[in-house]
Amino acid sequence: MTSAATFLDFLAQSLGDRTFVRATLSKPGRAAPADLRSVYLRPVVIRGESLVAWTRRMSTRDEVKNLTAAQTMREVADLAGATFLHLDAESAGRAATLRFNKRGEPAVHFRQTGSAVLTAEDLRHDRVKHTTVDAAAACWRELGITGLAGSILPSAQDKWRQINKFTEIVDGLLKKTELPETVRAADMGSGKGYLTFALHALLVARGVKAVVTGIERRGELVGLCERTARRCGCEGLEFREGGISDWGGAPLELLIALHACDTATDDAIAAGVKGGARLMVLAPCCHQQVRQSMEVRAAHPAMGSLLRHGILRERYAEMVTDALRALYLEREGYRTQVFEFISAEHTAKNVMITAVKEDEPVRPVGVIDEEIAQLKAHAGLARHALEELLGC
Image 1 (tube, rainbow, N blue to C red):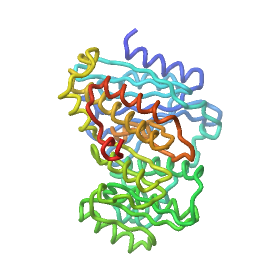
Image 2 (cartoon, helix red, strand yellow; image 1 turned 90 degrees about the vertical axis):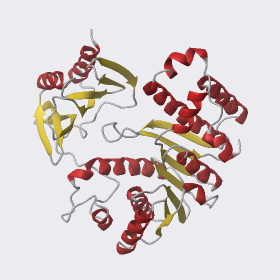
Image 3 (cartoon, rainbow, N blue to C red; image 1 turned 45 degrees about the vertical axis):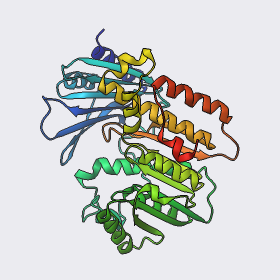
Image 4 (cartoon, one colour; image 1 turned 120 degrees about the vertical axis):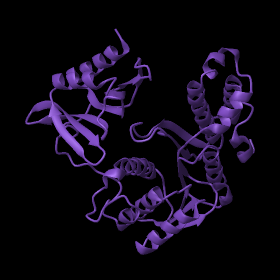
């Protein structure tokens, strides 16, 4: 059975046994209409009939239709390969990805997930989508996310999903964390301030005094966010021009960093550790430091064929970098998780690291140091940026 047929068989089985959770068709191919961006599928029940809701995301609008399982299978088979090069399907407990390369050759990969069978409420066609961010807030219009009528602009749909998912995760962690009356938080590399504003609103909604600072090198963005915060009456929200490393060891309870490039994510981790942050939420970006180190250093002989290919070396560098970051955080007493926080359809940089400070050591430091040394040796890595930043 070919890779494409294996993927389609997985999808058909999940539809047949009612374990289907969602599917996404993305990365338009040569046969895709110019304005078609992606297709999102989810199961629904309408008047007692099990159907699949299709949402075709165009450049300026969404098109929605409901199909039977048989119709869905025919359409997915027709769209795979020429219209869409990336297909992702998820069932309860398992997920499959189908990728077509430049020569049109398919490859399928399966992985385990924590998804459960959807409830009757999940399957409602008209279910209300709950979000952690209020789209009606004036700041979103100022920042170019919503229009005059308060609706999300077509060009900002992906960004809005990212903002909501990020704050949903932060909110879940905050519910498990004992907060002081005043919460000091920082957004390292705040950019246009989307997450900084969302985090401030989240903390205010939880009834604490929020002191939130966005750190950003680009002065024009700092000015924009400062003006927006003042116009919208966001008390306790400020923006500073500068680099993440300029933060030093100022105390704080919460730190977030979305797509801070290369070792800037490590600078953010170090700032959080030195500031005594109870909670850190990080979505790393590029991993140049580790990748370049692996290129100039002889790795384990068995890794030669892997590191010879640029794309594989890049992906391996990402895994090594973030695995080491999680280990160094554990060494500092944080309980960590590394996971995919949003579909690759919305951003290719979709790995998230969460770190929650524990009162007791997570694991013996000696055990963690041994794991770090073994991983570095296997990757042919001389050093990691966090060694110097944290003094390991």
